[in-house]
Image (cartoon, rainbow, N blue to C red):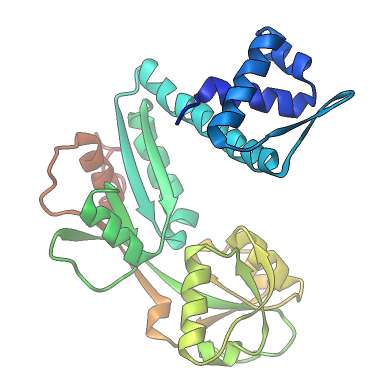
Length: 300
């Protein structure tokens, strides 16, 4: 590349101000210096970026593309600075943790709170992933710890029991499933669904199972969490599937909670870690103790 971050910052300032002089002032540079940098940027990219107009400047099609990329670059740099700042303030460690939606929305918040009470200067990157992706990430070292809902094992990983849960059907109190204690997933496919957003692990999981049955989910509304699913189902907007652990006592009065007959609805959540990690990580090990033995820190 024949340009640098200052060139991108200068170009972004001029583009957002629609004026070369105001952009230069924003960057604390002389207009002539800014003009020279933009001309160099255009020469390096091989295309005009700005349209010189009587009252300022506009963007060419290439300029619009560069603005979006430049904004993302600057946002990433700001995030990098933010992520590194804790190290300057005494951060003593970092743990990368992948888990499925079930664990993140129910059990992990309390467990992580207990961990942070003992390790306030530790940072955890917690990401939601599908169980298969979690196993791959932990085995390759991209994640330190995972929580999965798969029964299969992996030769390089150790699996420890974490929690037991169950996916259940949530249905409105409209009589459609009256007196049914259980229902098959296939019976639900013709009904409007309240679902998590695309990309959520459970959404992908259910879409794949519907496809395997030769059907599809009729998704009426997509929301960001299980509480929104429960509220919309209780209003009569559709049906939904959620972990039993995500329900509140009041939900039992507002909607029907019905067992799914499929074996995959039973969720034996397990913590997975590398069997022989290349590097020792005391904080990871302490977090595993908390996850697998609730209350261990309370007696310490």
